[in-house]
Length: 69
Image (cartoon, rainbow, N blue to C red; front, side, top):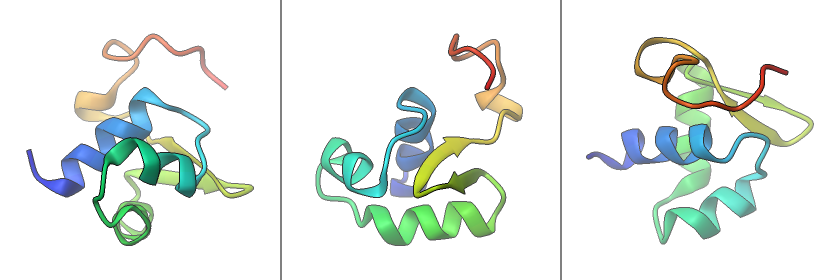
């Protein structure tokens, strides 16, 4: 899995996390750069410095059972 895909999975598994929290979970990947790329690709949204995955494709609601917000 690429670092980019890994960061997407981390965000999907930890909705509402900050960049610092995601970086701690992702174990050394350049989380901030990857989050910026994911945000510009519309794969992740950032609101109030917290990140959520965009629910599409493999990250649809059927894959992760977090409540809609």
